[in-house]
Length: 108
Image (cartoon, rainbow, N blue to C red):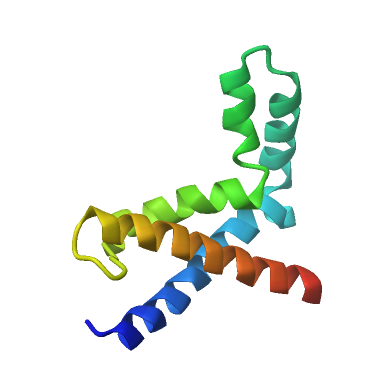
C-alpha cells in the first residue's frame, strides 16, 4: 500500500477505537460496571488488582486494549510489513483515537 492509503486507514480505524473507548469509559450505559471498577481500583489490597480495574476507568489506558483487539482482527500494519508495523500502528492508532476523544470532550 502507498503512504496515503496507510494514513487514510489510520484515521478511519481510529474512529471505532475512540467510539468504543469513549462509550465504556464515559457514557451512562456502563455507569454501574465503571463505578464497580472505580471502587475496586481504589480499595483492592493487591496493586495488580487495582491496576487491572483502573484500566477500565481511564480512556487512555483502555484505548490501548481496544486497539490491540482491533489490530488482532484487522492486521493493520503501518509503514513496515512485520512486527514493527504492528507496533507503530498500535501507538499511532491510540494517539489518533485519543486526539478524537479530546476533541469530542471539548464539544461535549
